[in-house]
Every structure is written in C-alpha cells, then in structure tokens.
Image (tube, rainbow, N blue to C red):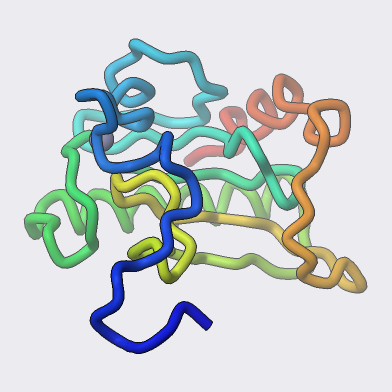
Amino acid sequence: MDGPPGRKPFVFSPAAEPRAGGRCLFCDITSGRAAAHRVYEDARVVAFLDRFPVAVGHTLVCPRVHVEKVGELGEEDLVALFRVVQRVARAVEAALEPDGLNLLVNQGAAAGQVVFHVHVHVSPRWRGQGFTGRRLSEAEARFEETAERLRGAIR
Ligand SMILES: [Zn+2]
C-alpha cells in the first residue's frame, strides 16, 4: 500500500515525528511534564491510559528511556518493560474482565507507530466488539474511573 521498499515511509502525524521540535510526548509523560492517567510507574517504566483508546482500559506501557524500537532497548529496560506489560495485563483482566486482550507494538510509521518512543499497547477485547480501530470518546473511555480501577488491581 505504501509502495515499494526503499520509498520514504508515510508519516501519519507530522506532529509525532521523533522529538519534533526537541520534544517527545512520551518523554514528557514519563518525566511528569505532561499529564496522563497513570496506572503504574517504577524506576524504569510508566503505564498510562491511551488518550485515544480503542477500548475501555486501553493502556500504554512505556520505558522511561527514549528509544524508538524494541531492538534498541537494553536488556534491563526490556525485561522491566515486559514485566510491567504482564502486570498491567493481569490488572486489566482482574478489573475489567474482558474476553481477551491485544498486546501490540507498532514499530515504524509503516506499521502505525505514531509516537516514536517504544511502547506496548495492552487493549482489552470483548466478544462481538470487532476490531474497527474506532477511538472512544472521552465519555465512553471513563478515564478517571478506569485508571482508578486499574491502579487498584495492579499487583
Ligand atoms: Zn521519548
């Protein structure tokens, strides 16, 4: 769809270019400079609700270190990241009782990466929901209540 290999990849959102204007949205969130509905954080990893969720409880798990790709993560950050992915997945299951989960990394613009700071999507799924990619409205997403429930379910 994007043409032959070697062609410059299509960029979904120019505003999300790597460190556009010297800023990275996820560095701003992990450092606390930008607000987010955080559900978990430790020395290496922060988890917060996606601002444009495809389902209630759609959470992003993000290392504090700024790298674009999974392959650029050091082993300690990689292990820390996926430990938190597991804890968040368990919390989503416990708090929201979905029928399933999507665990997903979009790497590269061609794969749908919009913020070029590696992150793992943990997105609950319910039977019959279909994967339309439609983003929930703020009212549908119930951010405050959902974040509170997930924080309470993190073990
Ligand atoms: Zn960053």
